[in-house]
Length: 226
Image 1 (tube, one colour):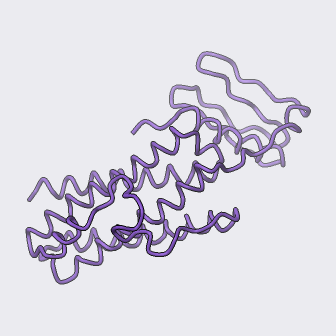
Image 2 (cartoon, one colour):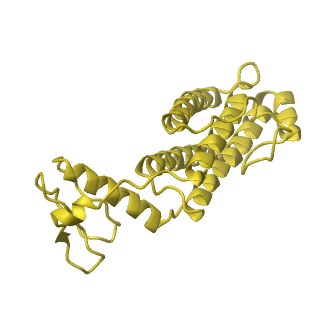
């Protein structure tokens, strides 16, 4: 997936400039097409130029005007919605025991359970640290609010709960792929809406995107063998 180069570039550069301003040596963020910039000595901040342009050292006056970009309403909404999205994924993994007859699907479900629980804790902590409200209880339940990208409806969940053996494994993979792809779409929407400029929000969004993308590829490979 192609994330917003502007949004990612701004937040990565801001984080690098602020860290170097307090005496930490940081390598500034860059596009893949940009030349490699060595970490600046403590007390100096080098701003990488655009492709084909030279880098330059920021003056003390320029450094004094720098500040970390604050989080936005789009960031907070993304975090709340992603908590709800992840909670439904845990509903799916909870159905695996007693229904799957394979070795690989339960192993996959356990990995998803662990990673999604870790990300839920990270997302909630981000909200708490910024004084933002947490998502409503049971917001992941079908019929509670609008369905987000990739979220399953009552028909999907009923069909999965009723399936057994090989049929369950196949349907589980199909539905979880759809669910994960929905999370990736939500990351795209975050950057489209101007979010992800705050460095922490950008990092969380990129981690969600990377984790879900890796698992989608793994599940597609598993589904291709069935």
